[in-house]
Length: 345
Image (cartoon, rainbow, N blue to C red; front, side, top):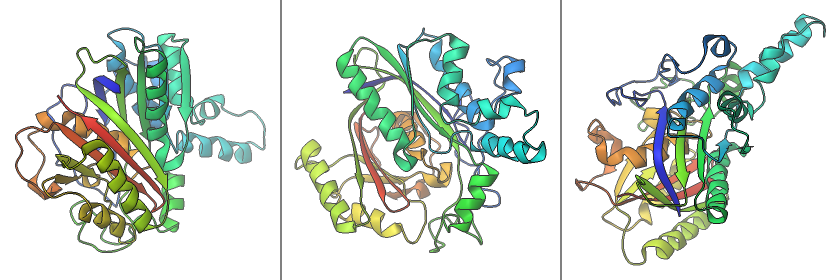
């Protein structure tokens, strides 16, 4: 069991710090850009050298470091500092391999966020970044769960971040993964066209193997690679039978992204879920990006104190006063799937 003690999230919605939580921001030109704070905890001379992914990751992490140093930093990202990487490659051509700016190179690697947090806080503990496309954040969670089994008294900073870089956005758009016309978070689930809207964000969690003062717990994380709907449905049934038996989960948080090619997978999950579960979609708030399950986990942990979620976000709703558990299902590009079971107090 992985116990969550503190959370922090920078996203396209007002989810950070002490701001009043709200979920009313819509996409612009097919993108949901994060609402960035002023990053008052990051020294100006360091902040101006940071790419957006590093800013968001460090900014979301710093509030969770105030209780004291964690024993290690475990991170997941698929794109990392891609924008800085492209800037550095362009400089190679521009300056004919002469005097290059080192900042873009240093910030361009996927492990830049975790390493920057470690350097700023002088944390010399376990520091690792998982880069597994649409399962990067899930791999970070599994790593943390194994570390907590080995060292139950230790605490870990676990997180995930990805940005909308111009290069990656253009590649994904040309690959058909983003909608090309009338792309909006408002009509995301009614357009019935291929592709989704681009998103970005950073979600951080302070976790340990001890349940004292925990605000939630991750009981299970399961991943599967398949393009077969039947295989997915069978694994989903096995997952529910293992953890719920004849009961039903109270809340399903669905990663449905409005892509007409991916919708059949989500429909199969809905059809094989026992009646009685509320089903909530979240990517109209976060957009689609590889580590969007980090936002979904933050949403699950925070769900019982949120009053601003619109009814339109729910596919089905029984009006439960507070949830005791939630299961997150996410699908990345029709081949990477994950189930995350969260127990709520």
